[in-house]
Image (cartoon, rainbow, N blue to C red):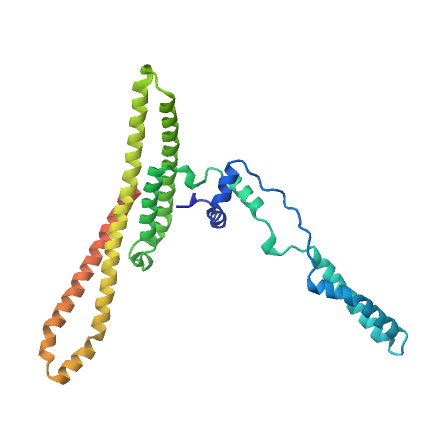
Length: 295
């Protein structure tokens, strides 16, 4: 199930939150990442080689400076100093892969508090219902009929994440209230408040039914989309067979059995027409379910 994020959160921040559920759990429990302290850098082989070569280079430069080719010595000295400066500058550089992101995650989690939900925010019943909603939404968004524009793709991309977030938000509230209610019952209920407790239990049950109805509406939409998806793929297969028919007709004609092809060709054409109608009807049904989902 993972981390559920408000669709209004920026995509790069949402991705960071979804990728770190365990750290978010620790942060919520009060854990604070330690300050980023630069770790001691190990000398690379190139640094060691440069250090070992220094006496040799200095001796060579001293000889060159006392010889007739003194300019070569100055050039060598300048090049050596340049290389040394470059290596010194790179000693304290921290490679991107070693830069800690825990502090960044802490900052983003604090700034977006209340805009993401963790798996532990849901009790077993709520988690099962949320998974159903997520599966329905994923089926629609990943369908070919949605990608091919037979459905309203932009509205799906906007509405379905909003529906998932709203369902998740309500289920998290339900889970928290149910946990509090169980704790209250475990402490014991006085007869004078039994009626009030019964009323609260009724409120929880009604809320559960309302959220379940939302999920079922989403599942009905997904079922219509799945029907359209089946018709879409079947239509594609029929069209593929139709494209191959001339070769079969040619073979039957050459073999003198072309009369046998006529009924099969007619049936194939009828199947294609039937599938086209099924596809259109399925898409229309899905669009009707989508309008109901918008409420």
